[in-house]
Amino acid sequence: MYYEIEDESGNISTLNLKQKVTDESVEILKTGDLAPLFYLRNDDGFPVTSINGFSQSGDSRSVIDLIHFKPLVLSFYCNCWGSYAPKHLAMIEKLAPQVEALGGQLLILTNESQKEIERIGRKLETELPIYHDKNYNVARSYGVYSETSPIWDRIAGISEEVFTPSLFVIGQDRRIAYAFVDENFDHTPDVKSVLKEVYIRKSGK
Image 1 (cartoon, rainbow, N blue to C red):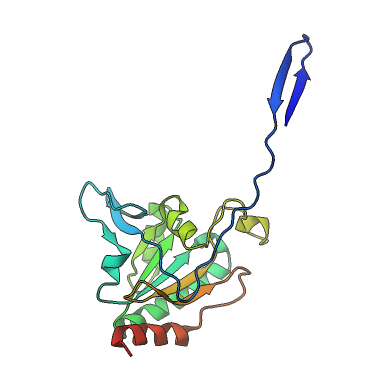
Image 2 (image 1 turned 45 degrees about the vertical axis):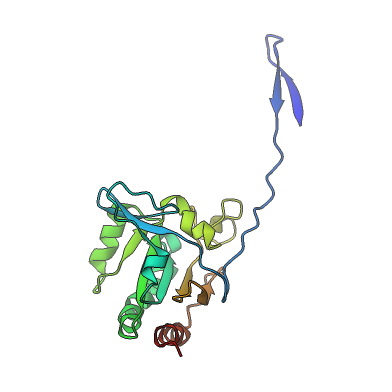
């Protein structure tokens, strides 16, 4: 839609007003879905994710590499979730050794900066693999981030671009075995179900 605007000097300019973009269709992954491909790599020592495998140092690992021998518990996390954040992180820290004991592995993806990731690591009693989700690409592909339907637009107390609290179990067949997405910030993952799916995928039962 075009509008003509005349300034004080009589000059006329044309303004093109774009219509509001319709909310993008975001499909949250569910049990049985194929887990989107992503890579882990380092940028000058800073662990980040990538949606392509290019890495000058040649140290990229894809999600396929990760699940080749062990099922993967993948959690998205952000400090800016307010009071929800420490509870979720405490749950993950408690869950990590149990997942490892059952033959699985855990990975945390966050939108935090390198400095903040280091600060989070110092607070933890257990060392956890935390990677920066560069440009929200992985979160977007897993359906837990959307520019057109932001969290801050519907959840009070959040004013930043963040992704939805979520946790997935990915089997060695790259299928989602368990999916937890908390759009209303009022639930926690079913730990027993998470561990059960890790055990089943590792043992092949």
